[in-house]
Image (cartoon, rainbow, N blue to C red; front, side, top):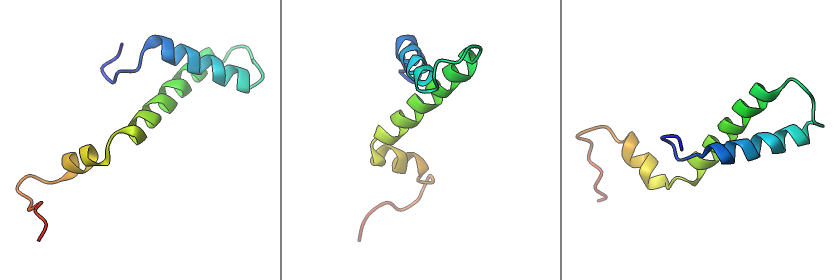
Length: 67
C-alpha cells in the first residue's frame, strides 16, 4: 500500500477497467496504470472532508473564529 492508501490491487483493477474501456489496445500498460493512479487519487481527494482541506489551507495565526 502506498502512503496515500491506494493499494496495488486497486490500481491494477482500475487500469484494467481503463484498458477495457479503450477497446483493449496493446502497448499502453504504463499509460493506463498512470491514468488509474491519477483517477484514484482524484477520487480520494474529492472524498476527503472539506474541513481537512480548509484547515490545511488556513495560514498560521489566522483568526478562524466566527463572529
